[in-house]
Amino acid sequence: MRLRPHFSFASLLLFLFAPSLLRAQADEKVALEEALRWVRQSPRDAVQYNYEMTARLRLLVFWAGKDNVGGGYVRVGRSVQEHDVELVQVLFGSDPAKAPRAINRWGVGTEVFRPRAVSGDDSSGYSAFFGFMKSSKGKSVSEMQGELAKESSNGSHLFSAILSRVDSGRALSLIVPMQSNVDYNLHQLGEAESYVFDEFLSSGRPVKKIPSASQCPRNAGFLGTVAELIDAALASNKTPVALCYVYDAQVHTLSLRSVSPLNKLTLRTHLPNVSKDAAALERTYSGLVEAEFLSESKDSGKHSNFTLVLGTSGNLRGIPVQIRYQPNWWFQVVLNLCPEPSLESTEVRGN
Image 1 (cartoon, helix red, strand yellow):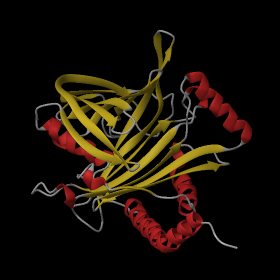
Image 2 (cartoon, rainbow, N blue to C red):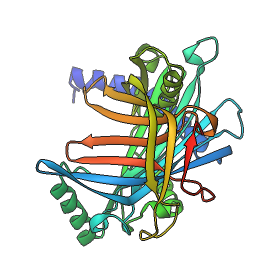
Image 3 (cartoon, one colour):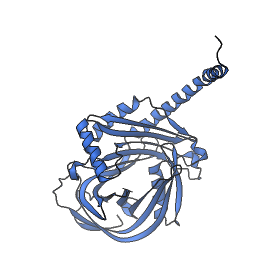
Image 4 (spheres, rainbow, N blue to C red):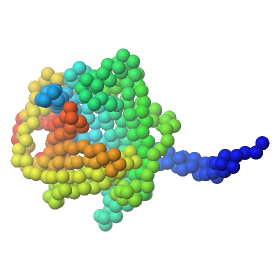
């Protein structure tokens, strides 16, 4: 029986190129496993800044909000192996014990990055990011509540994890959706991480790849790019300032759109890890700047805005005192910096 010519040609191509494709996929998996080890390391000289969350929902033509419904932290440090490699971890979300209707939506991400060299050689940098979150596709309050009810009745809670690495002119990314019979919340980070890491490493999903050097030579992720633009804001650089970054093997642009001085900002927050009925502490900050950011996807055109109110001197220089983010038309999040346990109501200037 004679084989059809096109079938023979396809078989020949498969025979010739399949081994190299398999080797490439294997090399990419090894590179991502190395990146996973980078982000799992404990940082040295780490400093943590805690935040309290206010959530606002749009009901027809007005906003309804509630304070102290969750929170999280920003943790910054350096790699234990390489002194010039920075590490940033962020964790934010609702607390089911405090949020209306016990809503449980949260996420965590860790990025390690080496900033570009003083010489300005962008290719000298690299970044790796690992994060996971409670998945949600709800486009309204009612849709999100429907998702929560379905998860509860099925006993299956949806998470999604992503691992990215950008270096040497390439960007690698792997996203793994997963279902857990435990509805982990932001206070169960250690347990959730163990579950997610096990599920992630056993995944057989293909790795996404782009030659990032031709599209974004900075070899940078989102958090490292935010850090660089915060420096630009504090240096009073002329705006707008735009930098490319890579997320999920896709090129995005992050723009510092404007920077304006803010003389005073008074926040009422609670000490970390106190009950929802505890009294709030009032703290007034002065000598701040308000920085407006815009993130845009090069491929899809989707965009999002967020605002950082930044300290300008002392131990709060470059640290967000307030973070404002509205991911969609019906939901807005405000994150306010919590006072240190030793601080009472006071006015703080520059630090």
